[in-house]
Amino acid sequence: PRSTLFPYTTLFRSYAARSDGRRLFHDARAPHEIEETNIEFVEHGVEIADVRWLSWSLRLEVEGASVLHHRSEVRSFYDETELRRVGYPETAELVRSVTGATDVVVFDHNIRGRADRAKALIAGDLRTPVFHVHTDFTGKSAQARAAAVSGMTPGSGRRMAAINVWRPIVEPLRDCPLAICDASSVEKQDLLAADLLYPDRTGQIYYVVFNPAHRWYYASDMQTDEVW
Image (cartoon, rainbow, N blue to C red; front, side):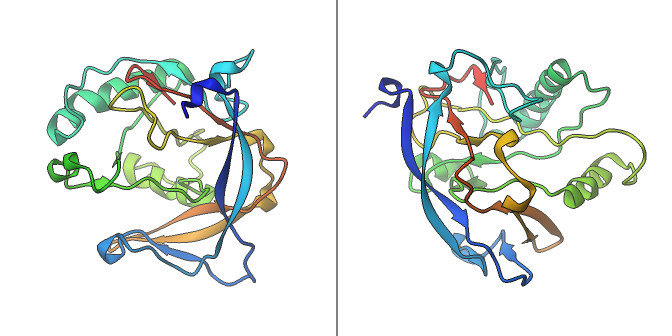
């Protein structure tokens, strides 16, 4: 059914089970896209609100996310050169205008989609959607990554934030829309740090354990001129 027909949708989210204190890891580059991890995941049904039906707008500084209108000048997101030449500067300017940041450094991107689609043949780095509830950084790994891409040492006294800009590249988006968990509904004890293993480095992310207080949102039928 079309998601736009309903203000709320109940879906099952894949949460991490609480660990016994052991070191948790996830191999980000496991062969043949097979996830190698010692983390156990459990499914929990959660109610996800469609932001189209809200009487108010999500706020980046409160809920941790917002939906904005922004039309990209990138003609092909599968063209690595064009994406970096056009997409990176326009994304930096978007973040700067929204946050008031003095400096914005765009340092990475991912293209996600169903691996069995024909378009995957022209995008060597196409990755499948991630269905486990997670963050992309911990406080520790965010500082380390910021230092690596900006040259600043952790604890330099400058305030920093890691921000994702997520957009559909086809419209309307009905296949695997992004689900956002309200940051103000997440408690510190809900977060499990896990090492993210790469061939050349080790990062760290949080997986999230279930808390019935979590509030979830998504945007139905997103267009290509909309971004999270």
